[in-house]
Length: 108
Image (cartoon, rainbow, N blue to C red; front, side, top):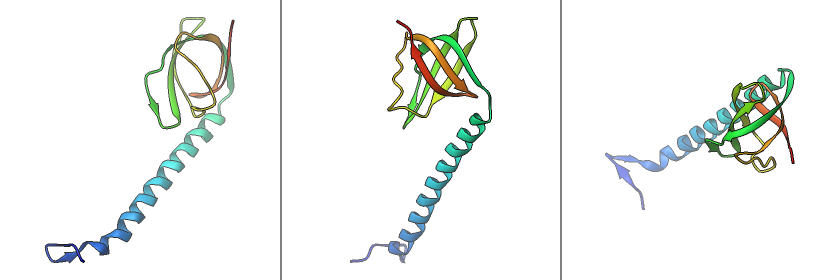
């Protein structure tokens, strides 16, 4: 059984679909590697902070809005979505490079 649209066989487009899908996956992977490499070139900073908000989670990437002791607010991400457990309202010492959270030590 063949599926035809305007006289063309759709099966001929299947390899092209998979090539595009694989290309998108590779592009996304390269983007994440680029972000990690860029952040790893930044100095490690540690501050006492409170987690104010966890606005979005995209796959294994989680974003957090934190407030530092000096009143600064930062939006940081974590690529350790399943390993690093942080909840809104937590207070502790957060270590980060660039915009990526490296660790969080909860107080209390």
